[in-house]
Image (cartoon, rainbow, N blue to C red; front, side, top):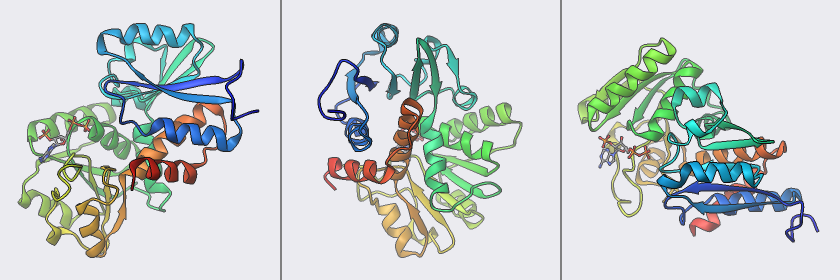
Length: 287
Ligand code: ATR
């Protein structure tokens, strides 16, 4: 039976990372395969940094259809691939690999999933002022895709040197001026006064620090869209206070689900059952 037993034709996908035990991706993808009656399975693979090249060789040798790539391999995997999507190349990070008969192409559906989570709520970032909190790996993809889309991101980070470095890289790649500031209350207040969208890419508010927030509640207001990419908990203190202030909110699960949905569509050529993938992830989070 399609979608139930593993057969000789079962297509295999998976995720590589280290650690890998906490990933939500297997439940999301396997529920999607089952829902659509696709004879496929998605497995977690713990791959140590020193074994990354061998793991990608295995992907070719075993004809695995595709992989997601997570910490710490998103940039290190690039030299082992044959082709790179232009956006993934600019971001310098890959979270999805598609194996077309041994030709491996890398994509960044983290960034595309972030954009999709905005668009599905009817929010078009082109031309908008966006405050991005953080300058790590997640901020990189998000700031690039916002700038590519025609938004005006301002990057605020606790260590402002990292924000400046990221702004410089985007400016160089896209020939656009990007602002960088320290994550101080005064800079936050000034940036938020002109902002349409606020995105938190820092880990502030994530378990176990759920009573922390990167933004004082008094700076939140109606008319602002607040997107917190933290998904554990799904409703962070930032989102709770944003909602109470009359702002529109988008949670991190939306981005997680969309990055998965876009990868699923590349591997299968089918439209992903996004609502089901979200429900499954919510259940797996125990929320
Ligand atoms: P990721 O790949 O998930 O973005 P990362 O590269 O470790 O992870 O980046 C984490 C981000 O959260 C950084 O921007 C970090 O700020 P610094 O670059 O100044 O370290 C930010 N961050 C983490 N803890 C923070 C805190 N307590 N207050 C403010 N920013 C914090």
